[in-house]
Every structure is written in structure tokens, then in C-alpha cells.
Image: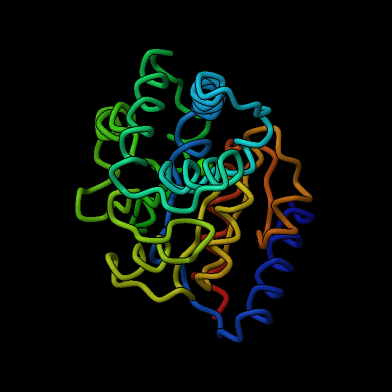
Length: 252
Ligand code: CA
């Protein structure tokens, strides 16, 4: 316990140094969806692979884990630039191709919730911390389930999805939009992420950024991309969360 607290204290100290902020309590949590609330990345990857094979392109599953967090349209533009040298893919065309990928994902069936996500969310709610969804996803088959799977956690005015943003992660835009929607300052918010480009966006937004390695991407890669602290599982983070919140409330 002492060691854990020391690690967290050190991470927060380094965060204050990096941002120049003073100590402040946590009032808002900006929460990613895929790989944080749902164990959905395997199916997203399968859907992307099916789409790319259909187009005659050769992609490995690992690549899609590295693109995680970007909007579907941004991934499609990246692929078409690489495979066809095209940089003129308009919104309509990207939307049409993304609709196929979304359909393939839906056909793969229901995905499980991430173990520990319920505990993490109820701890936040009990502490009076606002929960804001910040996802690059436009996958209706998941977004439409969210309120049923996590009842009473997310209100509709505190959601940022692919439909809201221009740039998407790794740009800080979606997290800055989440701050704006909740009325919080960066120093009062934490970002909860699992992907390299997601933690990059969180870091750039000025929020304390928690990385959780729920997929194959190793801890070092999340740290290199700007995570302030990394946990091996959502359960490990959920177990530490009450102490993290209390430390920020009582240390000043
Ligand atoms: Ca994610």
C-alpha cells in the first residue's frame, strides 16, 4: 500500500511539474470507451482486417491497435493515402466505407464489459466526480448500449464521440471538448485511456492521464506517449482509485 501511494504521489508531482499547475482536487473524469469500458478492440481489429482484405490491402492486427483512438474516417483516410496515394477522400466516401466496417463489427456480436470498469465508475460517482465519455468511436451498436450497460453513469450532454469532433485523437480536441462540456479545468480532471494515441491526446489536453494496458500494447509505449501513470488492469486502477481521489482532496 505504501509503495503504491508513493508511486501515485510521484506521478502527480511529475504531472504538476510538467503542467505548471498547483495541486487541485479531481472533479471530472474523462473516460475513453473501447478498451476502457468494453473489451471491444479484438472485434474492431477483426472488422478492420476484413475490410482491408476486401479492398486487397495487407494489414496486421497490431497496426489497428496503434491507430486506436482515431476516428474511423481518419483511419480510412490514412489507409487510402498509404495504399492509393489519395489525399482527396471526402466525408461522404469515408462515411460509406466506415459504415461497412461498423457493420462487420456489429456482425461479430456483443462484446464484454472490461472487468473492473463498473467498480471504477461507481467509485467516481460515489465521490461526486463527473463522468464524461470521450471516444473516437462512431459505432452505434456500442454507443447505443452504453446507458443500459452502465446505468446512471453517463448523461447525454456529457458525451464526446466521433460525431462531435473535427480532428479526433491524438489531437487534444476531444478531451478539450470534454472539459468544456463539464465546465472543468484541466487541473481538476483525469483522463482514463488505454491506447497510445489516446494518452497522447490526454497529455496534450493538460489533464492528468491514466493509461491502462487492457490490450497488447505494453506499458512503456503508453508512458512514451504521455501517460502520467500506468496500471496493468482496470481492476488494479479501480482498486487504487479511492486513495487517489482522497489524496487529491486532503493534501491541501
Ligand atoms: Ca480506447
